[in-house]
Image (cartoon, rainbow, N blue to C red; front, top):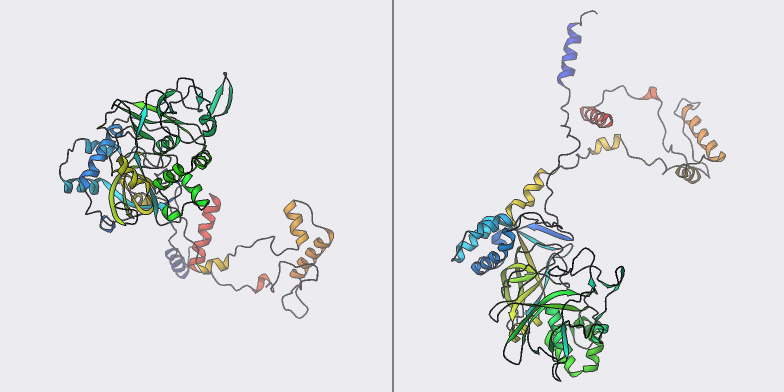
Length: 517
């Protein structure tokens, strides 16, 4: 082969040196990376501690003590739960640290949360605020035996109540899912609803724990999930939620609002109780609209002990909340901000408080939904009974789950081509500009009709043959068909002999690499 001339060698060197820098091609498949935090149906965004209203002024030591109570079962976990959630077992690390820190100062407790957690503003998707209600532990009169005064039984879980995937030895059956009544060995039917149970469907089977004065006391005990039953001899029976009959909970207060009996802005548990006492016949009908029925178990607690939540730890008045257990992990700290009627029905008391998720309830659904626990007794019942308000939620997640740090490692989509490249390589729909009959035939996988085929072949011939005057041929659409050629088509010889630009060459090369892969 003859050696290159000096001019040709110089030109080849310039061409080589002008070769564009190709983008780095990512390895396929992408590496398996931990996704950012995923909480179903929620939206969240990082927020600075200083931007959380009331964070600096809260009693962090009280929140820290409630958190340490939740840490006892969390630190003892050795393997993941069967239904892992967004936080998973990430709370074990801060719990192990808290287990060895018996703090006595609020400033150090505040520093603990700021050092080991990150706050995220969280709400339901498309909403800016969450929703809070309140609950408490009723203190009611009762008897161990049935009398003329105490006629309403409090039932323990029946032996024929069956839930698939859950054994009868379970400490508490799920709040969600179908519950059956087992007949014989194999037959399963829906369990009795409230009306059937009140009419005596399970009476006389030795399931009675104690007896109450009326069905209204029992209804409110079932709504709250626990109670202290004061007996005539001065002793107390402590009962806690154990199971339910499988029907969804229907709030009786909502029915009274829909029937225009009690205005929405005046609704409270006290209003419901007053109306039921004044309308006993209507109360029976209203109560049975809620087909859900709760069964209890007797727990060994003294009068000084607080009620035990679903996590299995004693609740802390003013610091414990019930959350949606399908989304959240027990022990998770939340900071809740709102204007709540704590001092009176019309007051707007600033509520800025660190709360710990330690309980759940069938009516507590959503990522920013909480039931605030206010303690036991009549006064706690009054406060919790008027809680139905919006509030802002901040969830505190361990720093190991920082969604911003995880997001930096996630692969991003390929860069969109520039407007110039998009014009050179238009994305067209081959069926869009075809005749309707021909497009329909191609879509159905059949051959085109003779008329459409002839029109298409005529258009193709016309596109190849130049006009008599030397100009590129054009094809005019007929009355019945349209062709894909809407503009004059230049002949190959008419294309300018100009080298493509660097951007075009880079795009073509990149497309070639993707096509080969």
